[in-house]
Amino acid sequence: MASTRLETVIEAGLCSGCGLCAAIMGPERATMDLAGAGYLRPQLAGPPTPEQDAVIAEVCPGSQVMLPQGGDGLGAPEWGPLLAVATGHAVDDGLRRQASSGGALSATLNHLLSSGQAEFILQVTASDGQPWLNQIVRSSSPGDVRQASGSRYAPSAPLEPIVRCLAEGRRFAVVGKPCDIAALRAYARHDSRVDELVVAMIAFMCGGVPSETGVRQLLKRMDAEPSQVTAFRFRGDGWPGMVRATLADGTGRTMSYHDSWGGVLSKHVQLRCKICADGVGMSADLVFADAWYGDAAGYPLFEEAEGRSLVLVRTEKGKALAAAAEAAGQLATHPLPAAEIDAMQPYQLRRTRLTLSRLLAMRATGRPTVRYKGRSLAAFAAAAGLMANVRSFAGTLSRAVRNRL
Image (tube, rainbow, N blue to C red; front, side, top):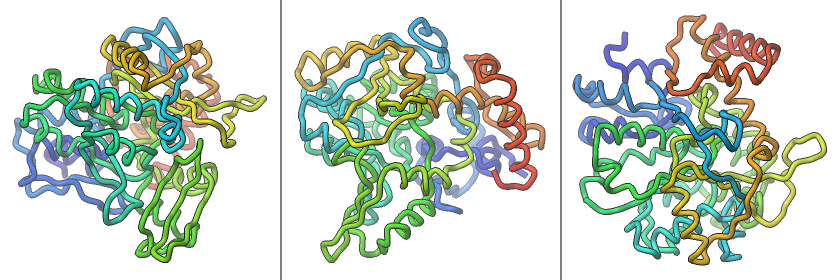
C-alpha cells in the first residue's frame, strides 16, 4: 500500500510524467525513465522525505491542480483567464513553415533570446539517439529554437532539470504542456527563485501524451524500422504537415497528421490526460495552439495551408511579451473574437466539460483521482448537457470496472 502521496499518484496511474517530483527529490533519489507501456515515470531509489512529499502533494499535477480564477470576460470559463485572443504566425516564412502551427511560439522564443530577456529556453526536442522520442534542451540561439520547433507527440519531462536550472541563477523561459506549467506555477509558491528567474511560462494546447509503445506502433504502420530511423518529425514542413521518418538508407516514410494522431497516437494516451480539465494551459503567461479552419459542421479541417497559430494571452507578462515580439518584427498577430476558439478547438472544450463525469466514475470504483481547485468543474459539466455527461460517466465507469482505463 502506498505510504506517500507520490507513491499513490504513481500506483493509481495519475502521473503525467512532468518530472517535477524528480527535480524536488534530486537525481540521486529519483530519475525519470520510460516504464510500463512506455510513459515517463519517476524511478525512486527510496521514498521522498516527509518534507519533500508535502511539497509534491501540492505541486504534482497527478495530485492536484489549481485552475486560476478570473479573466473570463473574453470567452467561456473553460478557456481560462484571457486578456487577449489572436491568430498569428512567425514573420520568418521559413520558421512559419517548419514549425507545427505557424511558428508563433518559436518566434516568441526567438524574441526572448534576441532581446536578452532570457538567457536560454528550457524546452523539448527530438532525442539524439532515438529521434522518435524526446529530450530536454536549453536553446540559447534562434538556430536552437528552429531545431527544436515542431510538435513532439511522445513522453517528455521538461521539469526534471528545473531545480538545477534555478540553482544557476540565470534568467530563462520554460515551454511545456499545460500540466507542466501548472506544476511549475504551483512550485513557485515553494521556491521564490521561480518568479525571480523564469521570465515566461509558455504552454501549448495538449491533446494528451502518447506512450513510446504508441510511437513505435506509428513507426510500424509507416514501415519504418526504429533502428533505421535517423530523423523523425511528427509535424511541420507545412500546416499541419506530415509525419516524416528519414531512414539510414536515405529513403523516407510519411503519414498524414489526421491518420497519425487520429488513427494511432490518440489510442495510446496516458490515463492522466483522459481526466484533464486543463489541456489549454490556464496557468501559462501565453498559450499557443493550432487555429484550425472548420468545415460547415464546425469540425476542424486538416487540409494543408499556410501555418496559423492560435494565441491566448493570459497574464500582463504574456501581453507585454507578445506585443514586444510583434514590435520587434518576429511575430504577426490578428485579433480574434474569443467565441471563435470553440470552433477551432472543439476537442479541448469537450474534454474540459466532461472531466467531472470521468472523475466521478473513477471515484465510484474507489480509485484515487486528481483534485482540481479554483474553478468549478460542475459549471463546466453543466455546459456539456445532461446526456453528454451520462454517456461520459457510463463509458468511464465501464472501462474502470474492466480495468481498461
